Image (cartoon, rainbow, N blue to C red):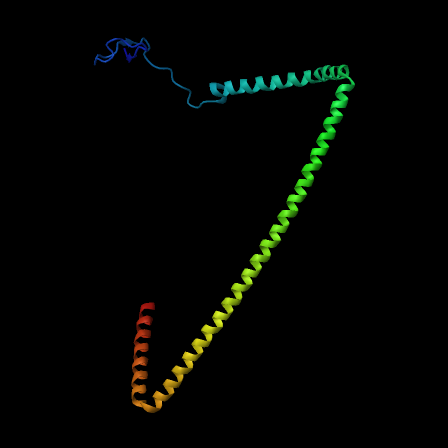
Length: 192
């Protein structure tokens, strides 16, 4: 027989000891096997969910059927109250219209204020951007003039150098051409 260990839910005064809980023997030889493929009809969770949905739909249908009778009861109660309710409803309608008009006016004022602030903000951003562009344009012009001046100075020095020291210019040009040739050969060999 298979042995099944079960623990008792109550605690004994000796719960701190290392004794093993009592062992109950089971008379069942094997546990029942589950079906190979569980179908929706045999799934208890689905059955409970279907019952809950059916109960909810039934309650909703019965409430809808009772609705005309409840409306008739409500109409009769309203007629009993009489003109006090109609004046109260009329006053509530007027106050609601007044409140809606106040909210509409407040919304228009807020929108106009927002439009004014947006216009000021966009004009401020536009003037800042225009100033920044103008500063960048001036700075670029000064830098371009500086580069042109340096280039003119270097070209004048190079022309003067070619007339004063032609042999040195030829040697520098030849060594530069040799270095460029070596670099191109290395680059070409790496590409292949």
